[in-house]
Length: 525
Image 1 (cartoon, rainbow, N blue to C red):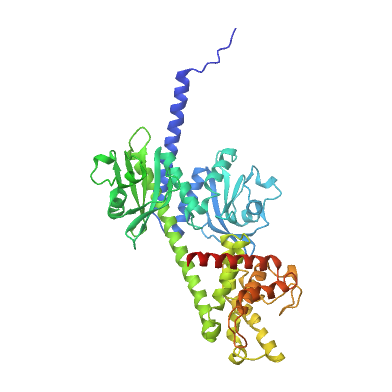
Image 2 (cartoon, rainbow, N blue to C red):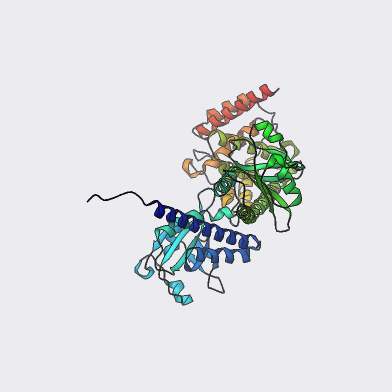
């Protein structure tokens, strides 16, 4: 008897319907979660909402959000479901969640008490009996661990591979919510791509409002290639949504008098239907709009609108936090600029030295292939490298002739003063090495520098960059005791000691940067 391997079309159709029903229920659940989360802006209220929903989503008894304290090398619980007082902290090398953080891996344990990595101390304190565990690290935009989420006791038995996939999909990028970390352009583009896929549209865009220019500009777009779009806030559907703060679902764009067809005329694209929703902050102010265009083989539905409106609340949180981070960054940089200006005020002849050294140092780093974050750290250290000169007497700093041995010993103390002052400042983890990098810019590869007499590999590479930038700037600028030297002569002096006092690769990078900049200047003029 021959076995019939053909698929029954009725059964296949039933399976497709069942799959669609499951996906529809998941989408409804997602919208409900987004609405619930989006309606709350207070972080202390928001985290319990999110963590409770994560527990429900993965059918766990409890969940805990840990943040990483690098200074103490420990994890402390920002929120622990089921515990009134959340004062849990554990050493990073202890327990399942610690292993997850150290390895950057998801850890799935079926029976906690049979796993040698399990730390039972928390159970002893709380009286809770841990059975199964699913732990996942939380990564920032630079793929660095900033915390972890731990789920306890799967209600239906054990955590599955599907649960691991869900955690990887939704938890490893927890920072993208904007609650923990600042979102970047790539994350915004991924979000718009998801919108496009979920609503089955041809194009999707996230616009922000430029209040000064009275325009909307794309922070991310999908289906538009590499094009960035700027629209007048007084024109078109997106502008109207931004102005009124109300969603619009337009089934036929060219039949609607409010539609601005000028972008279509420029791009050659034909817009058929549009779904546009506002993105509002907690005060109801419109920050931007989400726009979806041309639903594939259809028009946008009420369900599509509900989905985008729910999603817009989460986007608003991320945007508000991005603005807060930018404001804090501007404040931090302005404080640094004031500090650098205070050095200039002490000696007008050397005014601008710190800024010039910073420019050269960052230019060297760029030539050497440093990333944006590394260049930023270096720039902060370079700007503050001479801050200790505030503690040196003016008669020594401004002396027109050669310093005596005693005076030279005195001026050498500016690196100690720099280090001591900067050590008193609270730097975030990213900038925690700035005092050390800045203070040792007079150390030399052969140990002939001051004050520690550090040699070669003992000197941080960023410090080696500042050292070369500092000497070059000093040689090419007027001083109380001599005139400025030409750049060519300054390079000769640096190259004479290249490999013995100064890092040869740094000197070469400075020279390349300098002449490249000079070449650009000649072209511009």
